[in-house]
Length: 355
Image (cartoon, rainbow, N blue to C red):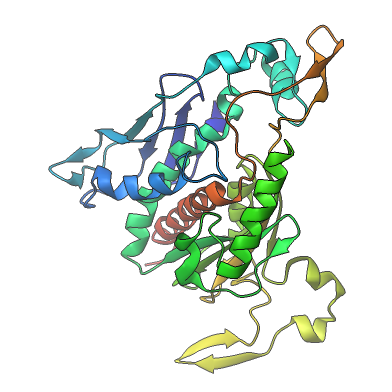
């Protein structure tokens, strides 16, 4: 099904369900000769895996990746690369009470209407577990992008009412919420813990920065670079909004201000504020690409709720299981992965555009 495939030249197909035997991906278009090991991929999977801290789900998955094809003697062969991660800590019994119920905020009803069948055990393909495959594919993309000195960094800018007041990229991996501000991180953890103790959850804002991206990537009209990035990140569950550069603030700025003052630095055209977020006309400018995402609060909460049943009745609902009280910390590596897939595809496409 086309909805499980992403990319043009670097083409990724993900497979698997939350409570199935495994999740994974097949990647077509990986250039031959790239040095690649399971350890290269594992680093990013370890940042996404569950059970990292008290503010993430306590499902215990090692998320150990297996390379099944496409690598020989430590290098890619140019043939399809298959990556798989086995599921080992499912508790399907936790979902027995929701077998005939459409849970509030979940994809149960919409999936049932589309397919006439729905895997109630953790949501099947609608589960965040599917993003394991995206992160694995993104790790491969990042290996290629490193050859071009392109770096992608994401972080939690806000959780609920708590926002980072400063941006220090060196501290992102030194706190459980992946915030760029250690003081704000402490308050974010407190806010998430308070919501969790009340059987509730919190959303937030994640920001991502792409540095070293050359000018000229992206295509006019339908395949603008920000359109491709927006599609990529909006395909991640729980993301409800995206903005680039000045974003929605552009709506209240006069054109004389938003046009931004250009200047020359090191033989390159720069802008004073980068209001465009590194992309104009759908094509990268060589400036840092900056975008922000609105993350909704997780739908699986312990508070008692009213639900609709498959026979169109109503029923009280208490959701059991192990769930994230805030998705921001674990969604950061997923956002980075999807951005990497877009940029590597754009880099490879650019090689077909001009001599």
